[in-house]
Amino acid sequence: MASRASRSASGSDRREDAGPGIGTPEEILRALADPTRLSVAGQLARGPETAPALAKATGLRTDAVQRHLSRLARVGIVAVESDRRTYRLQKEALRRAAAEAGPAREPGLALGAADAEEASVLRQYFRGGRLTDIPARRSKRLVVLERLALEFDVGTHYPERQVNRIIERFHPDVASLRRFLVDEGFLSRKRGDYWRSGGRVDV
Image 1: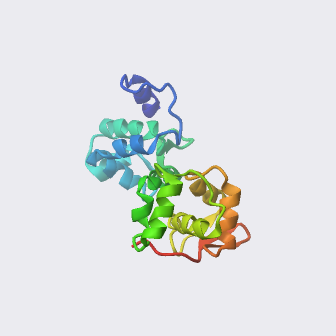
Image 2 (image 1 turned 60 degrees about the horizontal axis):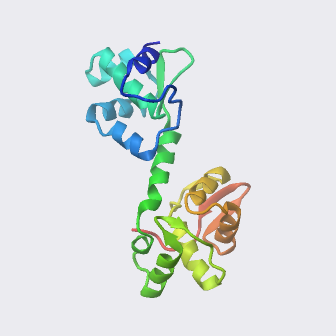
C-alpha cells in the first residue's frame, strides 16, 4: 500500500503506470546510480524482504526505504508480492537491461585479436551496434557469427527464448542467425538448451 501511495505522489514521474520491466537500460542505471538505492537493491538480491526489514538491514528509515523501492519499481526492477508488504528484485529485468546495453560496444574492437580484414567486414555489416544485413558469402558470414557468439558466455546455458532476445538486439531474422550459429559450431543445442561451443573468447 505504501509503495502505491509513493508512486502516485511522485510528481517527477510522468508515467501513470510504470509496470514491471518497462525501464530502459539508461533509466535502470540512473535508478541504481544512487548508492543508498543500490544498497536496497543489493539486500533484495539476497531474497524478498519487507520495507521494515530492509530499513533494519540498511540503517535507513522505513519511509526512506519505501521511496527508494518506489523508484526501483517504476523502472521495473522491483515488484511487490501479493501480500502488498514484501518486495522482490526482478533479476530478469536487470539481466535484460544489461544485455540490451551490450551491443553498444564497437564490433571491431570487441573481437580484440581480429585482423584488418575481419575488422573491415565488421565495419561493413554493423552500424550503431546493429547488424545491417546477413552476409551471403560464407567467409564474411563467419566473421559476423564470431562477433555474435561473443554475446554468449562460455559455460552458460541459455533457453531458446533468451537466445532469441540476444540475437534480436542485432537483427530481426532471429531464426536464420540462430541456425547459422548452430550449424557453424558457435553454439550447441540440445532439447531447446543452447551453449557456447566455438569462436573466440573476449578477454
